[in-house]
Structures are given as structure tokens and as C-alpha cells.
Image (tube, rainbow, N blue to C red; front, side):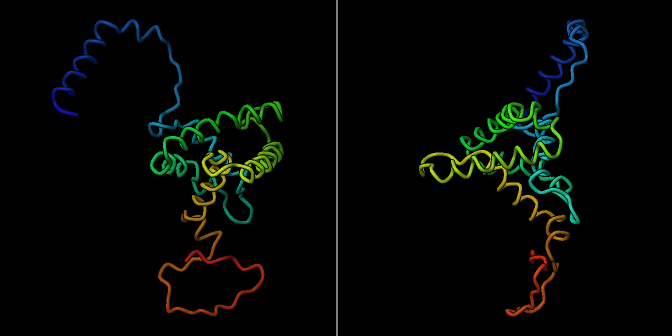
Length: 189
């Protein structure tokens, strides 16, 4: 923003405060969710966190919500996805609420844990069938994108790498024959 544009905006704000204050006061106090970036608002980040937590719930290790996968999703979708994939992702959020309401009677956020798990399992079955029959030029299913970015966000986070996987900050010498016992966590490094 240049100086002329900044002064113009300040003048508009001051003029609006004097001339149009009654308009702003009459509008009342309406809560608008805070924009996280130019694609997503805070309500959508909260929904991402709930979806991700249902995919990777907290057990003996932290879940996706603790790894802040919702925030990760907003950055990755905005910065790394094509406009077409961004649109599919955004439309998928709306579809999740619509389909969840049809399946459970509630939107996803208002559904209980069991309803969420059952709903996402059905949605996962649907996306697998779609992905098997889709043509190469067709886009990926929105839930497939959400699952993939959930896994990427969780396992590349500090929480996922250090508490769900085994992690050595500075690895030592290369050892191609590391003993592995059934049930050991995979290595992050």
C-alpha cells in the first residue's frame, strides 16, 4: 500500500466516523468469523480440526487437533493447491455438513463422536469407489484430499513426529540393520 492510498483510507475512516456513525451503530453487533487467510475463516479451521481429529483421534498419543492440522490445512490448500482443487476443497466442506445432516440429522460439528466416525467411514467408502472409477482428467474426491492433508499435517508436525513416531533430532551413523520388534513405532527421521 502506498502513502496516497493509506491517507485516502484514513480519510475515509475518519469521514465515516463523523458522517456515517449512525449506520455502523444501527448495524448491531454481528459476529463474523475471523478470516485466517483469503480462503478460510476460523469456523472452517475449527471444522477442519474436528474432521482431522475424527480421522486421527487422540489415543495414547495426541490426535490431529493437538497437532493443529486445521491450521496446516489452510496454509497448504491456499499456497499449494491449484484454484480448481481449492474450489473442490471448499465445496467439500459444504458437502460434508449437508451429507452429515442427511445421515445423522446434525451438521458435522454438532454430531457426536460415534456419528462422526460412522459418517466419515461411509464417506471414505464412497471416495474410494469414486477414485477407482475416475478418469485421469477428473479431480480427486474432496475427502481424499482432506485425508491426505490430515496425514501429512499430523506426521510432519512436531507432535506427530515426536509423540506418534520415533524421532532423533540429529541422527548418528547410518545403520541399515536396525532391530525392529512388532508394535514399535515407525521412525520419523
